[in-house]
Image (cartoon, rainbow, N blue to C red; front, side, top):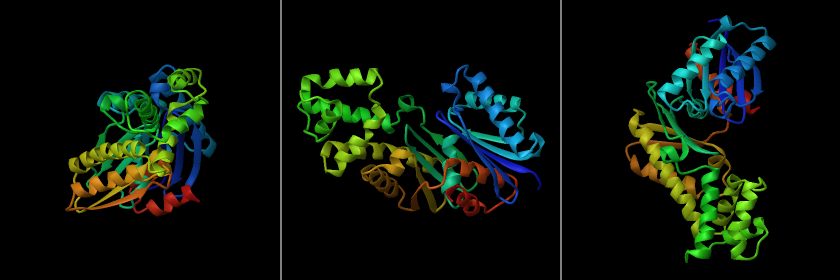
Length: 326
């Protein structure tokens, strides 16, 4: 087959677009702005503006026409329901792109991290999301909408838990925690009476980002702080329930690859959460071999591999992902 394959990973902060030829060579990798309609001015209209401009820039730069794109895979944040999928599909069609597959961006982690092309991606970063693709092509997505879907995880969650654990130790006869000293130092306070007052002030004026306080939990856990370890283990246990739901909802056979993605899973400074997740998932499936791996290639590599697969170009996982990690 002649032509090109296009892969897109679009989120609330930035978007990556990869153009490859039919040999699997990445012809172009471009970075664009956010393409999550929820955070764009005008919503779906804003999404059309961004996608239309991005596709136009990438294709024009490489002298490629829309009719030369054999297949495209777009993993976009915000594709969380049937109605949203339909509306975003309409937006993509209006840009002139055809022959595309639109999925939630969580699915890209499977294709970017699972050597077999099938497995479960467990994302824990800014938020959490869990997606699976089984060997027959069955797909299932769990969570991804924060508290609306009961998700426990992400930087904001850990920050809130750190603040709450310290408050409990100060005012609710809660267990002492070294996170108190860490947060007092960050806030520049020495009295418990100033704790919440200064915290709220710094959050409201933008001098403190709650999500960044996730590091406090990891540092405290490394000091064997019981409240911090419990926060991480509780998060790992909830993440495990979502992973189990994906595994049980699809048909993987004997072996399941679980790809851990997102900054909390990949760069977390303590393994308590991941260890708990792995223990629970493994124990729940004694008849299966569960292989855990941390995502090394960027998610857009998964979109590129997937688009090539749909063009009939098989076994490109290693060759394509290597180009993104060079």
